[in-house]
Image (cartoon, rainbow, N blue to C red; front, side):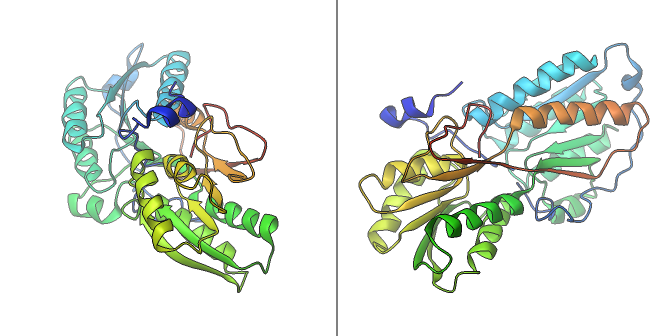
Length: 332
């Protein structure tokens, strides 16, 4: 398990990417978001095997988010009687497509896909559809327009209720700092990932209750601690009046914490695993990726058994307040 405090010294975690929670299907916008699937697919013959083969595709293992998710897939898969193979794409879209194509040759009962990026993932879903393999997506939402262009569909999406997480965080800011306090807010975000944008929208909706709160800058942390550190430092130089930062992902929070040491600024957002909450970093919300992996396995098992599964499952986020330290399984 990656230790965030250790990497604070080394600052060598530029490979960490979190498309946590992510994509363009509206999924994650709210618990009432429209279904993300066509919902229908034929059951592969391999689902009747004594130990059905389940293909799992994840972006990386440098992020503790995916380490936890992999554990959930493997442990719950064994319990449910699946033979689970997990492939790691090292954050390369083309590599993930090639890995999935290779797994499809083994005729899996289903594909569980946490894509590297939302739009390129549509080609992966199409490849699985063409092979007659149902697709269950988790965390990263596959871009809706790209799916339509490919003529592709998924069975289910499971992930965080991202809008609710952003809203929770914004409400906590107003509770801590005052409903009418003067707030100059900077965002460390990822504008190319829909779930991250949804988090931002939830946060902005909550702080709109305070007429004295305004967003003065948004920077792209690229869901990497080192990149977030750099762009947060630049943002603070350009806008020294910023007194609140909303970090839309765990890696963004980690980088922002490093960039604002010694400055009078409060950081709120999605949790960096094992990063203690302090006066400077008072609150965060977290996903539970190990649980997501387990739940996807359970959903595949239900579908395999002939039960109807929901097109979309949005999971609540857990709020942590100082002086708590989110454990390794609770990440943004």
